[in-house]
Image (cartoon, rainbow, N blue to C red; front, side):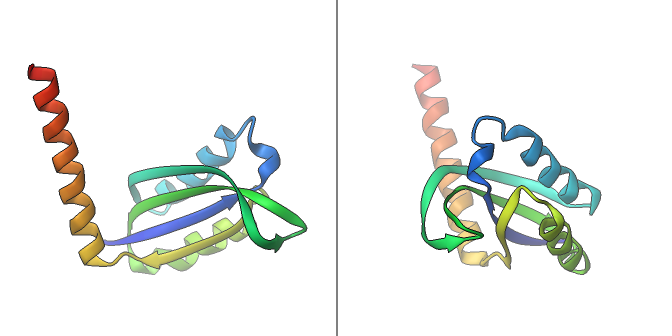
Length: 117
């Protein structure tokens, strides 16, 4: 399995009830044998240019472990979801992955030290 970064722009009208759309994306990843390592929600942001007549979107980022043969299937599944206005799946840079893991471990150690005090 390789690590990928999946960026998704959800339709801004879903802001009040985004959980079904998120569940559909996570189910699509799981159905393809993928595992989500990390999820980052950036919230609603203004777009640099209009996409499908919209000037804002809800940004989500996933760190996913997935077989390379299933990347095209994930791409196709995301294209077919009406809630997703744009997406991008790219192979994760190993240096970025290591830096992120180191940062997360430092945060965990700091949290553990705070709890001990």
